Image (tube, rainbow over all chains, first blue to last red; front, side, top):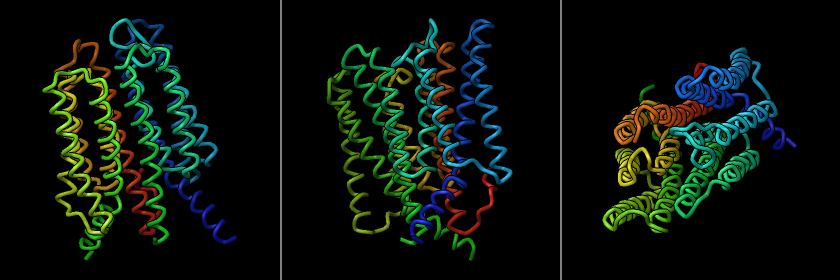
Length: 187
Length: 187
């Protein structure tokens, strides 16, 4: 009984202290999104549309960071919901954002890299099972977003490398999370 | 005295983080080798160089892994040298594929993640900074249309920085937790 309570308390502390990593990862995402929107849009309507999700993400992150600084941090459900929203926004960017110059859809979209810090930060904070679920979700959704755009073996190699490195971020993050938990327990 | 304790703590951090670096390197070696050998797209000379570099990395990693399995500490300079070699090999592997156009730059992500949780923040900053400068130079100099490709390069560099930064923030949080100081000065 005591062990269960200690493990629960430890998991709650992981979320309490660690969620700032997720918040910082999201700030990087917001900066990159702002760079992308301001730099690559060529008409005012496109810029206005591109800025809206960034503003929404900023508002959410201000709220979460503010709560953290006031020592009233979010719980696991809230940070999971926010991380799923990050995932949805990045996936929408990968599927929908394209121009007639350097950016294509799906596999040709270069902004899949936004998944990496989000996935890593999540893996540092939540227990292993939830991390594996989230990592699987990211890998599955990204693979599904790219499959219609695969044209040959080289594309398949590109996709394989991206999927393996994405899975590695979740795997290595949760591996280190476990090492730290064992260190705190004195093992 | 405090300095001695700090050094001992850094040494312990390195010992615990080494297994993450070694695991990340095995992942990079495996995927790098499979992608190089399977359906090669370059010349024989390029493939020879790629395979030789990856095998060398594999031999070095086997030695480091063996040290960990025998519970023998890896000298700090060897750990630093091995991580520098990781970043160097990834940078070299990008060049035959055109630098900016190479899909292999995603290998930087697990490499930076692993060293950011194993090394002290100052060391991580040096390695991450060097990787960002080197990759930034490679990407900018080899971009087919620099004006259009620059936002993509900036986003890639921001995400590399995000990975290292998240690793450092998490490293500091865990250090504070182990030392019993749970204030949020890392924000």
